[in-house]
Length: 80
Image (cartoon, rainbow, N blue to C red; front, side):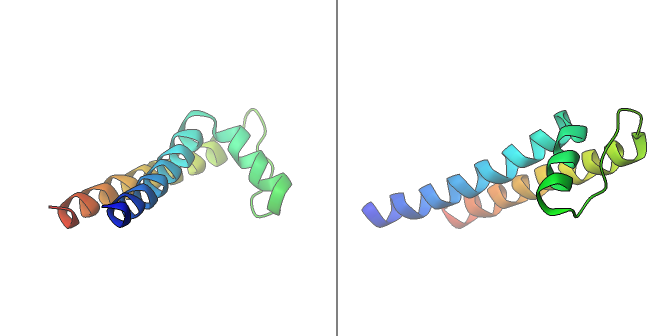
């Protein structure tokens, strides 16, 4: 039983990580883009009127949420 809780806990943390990042990207795309820019320099700075960059971050956030849903579906099928 202890091992099962460890595995389920790990999958739960992974799911919460994917959904947390995805929701943050959808809700605050400028802040997320600027955080990536300041931390790693991988994404150009996002200004208040950069609708294309915000749209790109939001689409990536929706992809993260889609991946989290597929991940949860796969884990639920695995645990049946």
